[in-house]
Image 1 (cartoon, helix red, strand yellow):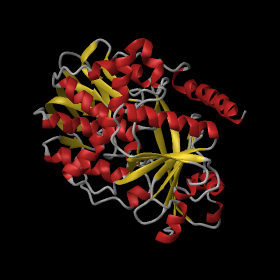
Image 2: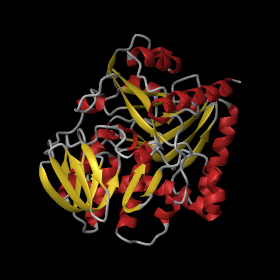
Image 3: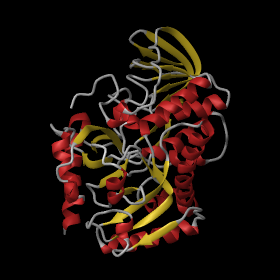
Image 4: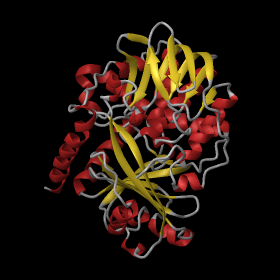
Length: 430
């Protein structure tokens, strides 16, 4: 799969709102803050800082929203990180509880940004975690109890085998947990809408401006092929597309491929037979399936996370059998769009938000492990608080967690992790 400098040939790009092309960087520029990366993390950090009175320049190597921010499944789901109990020795009970509360706040940040700026991104509320096994359903009950204890204000409802058909028209599941505080949206339109917000706030946005070199120091100098930015503070938001710009950060993120297909328009009646309540859904397997309906009644079906670094030759041929296992009634359906992209995986699955060691004026946010739609917006809020000197301690909580560098270097770490994930999938079958 070849990725051009333009947006991926996805359903999202085909249905995106009209948007301007932004200039590429030429000549000398200066700002309080320079941000590298034009996805959700970079765009929302720019918004947070501009609202606090900082002058900001943002550099994107290709198009704004080009990476995972414009390609993802569009699922806006509560929570941040995986298995937060693992951080008890580092953060203590109150620290872990704070992470859980921030995972709920993250969705509200997206909600508020969309509503405040009237971003047209088809935001729809309603999500269901689906259980393939009874043990998973028991886990959902425990999770619902924990969410209520945290003060979660949205409706949660368990559905069993007899009622799961009210959520999904498939015989594959034994139940699920409905969450009306999570939902789905058009991810590229969200990114483009947020770019427009940043632009209105005075952020200088530059596309097709790949960073070639960074000179660190009291004043940071960021170089592109035809320009240079001088700034007091630098924020690196490259995630899965680091490309060795900073090897220390790049070594802590594993780029993993994820893929989506979009069917032909199914019509409202047929689409609602598949997802009667128009919810986004996701199962619990290691090689998970996630899917939802688009505003024009297509099924958007994704999953098949690849750690090998190699994309399928034919995404539709690879993904369609997976779709038909869930919805055999769609045999013969036409696939209109197929695309993929890279998500950034961290070893402990907690987003990495902090300062670069030895460089107190260099900040970063990355490694959202497939839950970036909400976690990026939270990371941007934390970066805005930290850079503006707000002493909330929230940024420090994330920065305190150590993150392992993947072994094997740039070329071996993906195959090594692929073997590890195969072991987890074999355990799942046992």
